[in-house]
Amino acid sequence: MSTGPAGHVARSTIRPYSETLDVTRGGAPLRTFLRTADGVAIDSVYEPREVVYDSSRADFREPGSGVDLVAGEGSDSGAGGGQRAPAFVVAHGFTGHVDRPHVRRVARVLARYGAVVTFSFRGHGASGGRSTVGDREVLDLAAAVGWARELGHTRVATVGFSMGGSVVLRHAALEEPDGGRVDAVVSVSAPARWFYRGTAPMRRLHWLVTRPSGRLVGRYGLRTRIHHRQWDPVPLSPVEAVPRIAPTPLLIVHGDQDGYFPVDHPRMLAAAAGEGGELWLEAGMGHAENAAPDGLLRRIGDWAVTRAG
Image 1 (cartoon, one colour):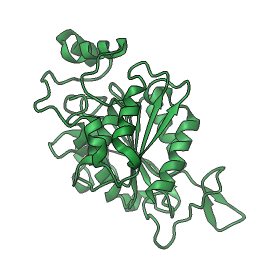
Image 2 (cartoon, rainbow, N blue to C red; image 1 turned 180 degrees about the vertical axis):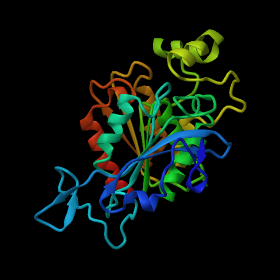
Image 3 (cartoon, rainbow, N blue to C red; image 1 turned 45 degrees about the vertical axis):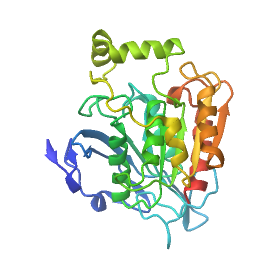
């Protein structure tokens, strides 16, 4: 394993950013391991913004939207940059990882609106460490946000699903997170409070996390290595974190058919956010990235482009 630029631990030889990408016309994705503040290697992928050339004009437009993507004075200079485009940092749900089909689908849709960083949380996929199920994962997200900043993006939006949804809330609530504050936050299918066992899927998840036999299933069946220690101290809950996010724009998205967390969870989060948050209750939608249709992801992309600017 070799050491990449800026202290990254690379899984293969990766050329420096400036040699790899044309910052105005996109380029090849980058894949590397990032080091978190506590030393965990996080498998991460950077994908430039998807742009097309409009032969009728000397600029770029987001496919099908008419949104001007041309990089110019005062614009983001990162890969696939554009005057109003943020970079999206996507935080997957528990037992997901960067190569899961639905994580890749989320990245493909959001790449129409900005560059995208995806990563595997600790204990998931090829990342090191063990999952703490939403506690120290805030350090993983901070490393990914910091990478996006390092690559030249001046506006960053975080988009989290389920466990990742709780992590983006806690990360945004920190006064000075590593990588700096983000410019917009989208939390999809997140819990409002910890230790919820009110649905059958959540009771199964607690068995997976708290029992040795469950952790074996997670390790060998789900490629998820779960830490055996309980939280000490218990981290700030999502509903406690939400009031601290303002003035950063916040969007809470939840399906009314979510089998893990019923709609009282997003309503609690929205109530805690007050005027600082926006709630979308999606009719017929289930849980997290697997259930999020492309149309919803496009609406999230539009929202982030508008709010993060």
